[in-house]
Length: 71
Image 1 (cartoon, rainbow, N blue to C red):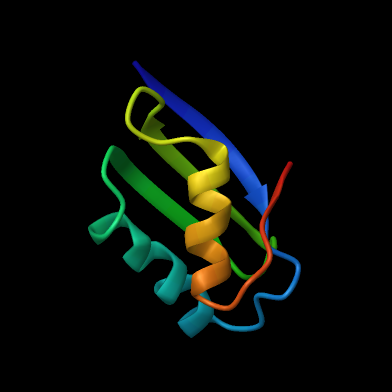
Image 2 (cartoon, rainbow, N blue to C red):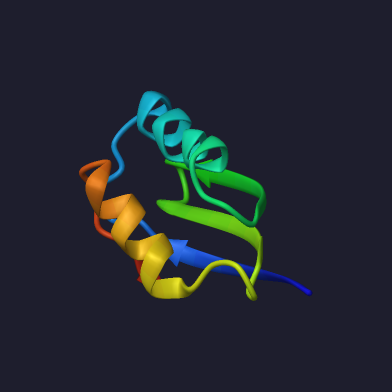
């Protein structure tokens, strides 16, 4: 089953940051789609919750150099 969650990314500063976060789509198993907006300072991710947890998403965002908080 796919779940859709919004994460606040308070330290995203530009469209390149958003693209970097959207590239997680290629490295995380179970991700269907990621949409990041630096205007809204958030990332919406649609994923298979049987393959991926919120904690794993937050850890992956942290590896990219950003903080993520469930909205």
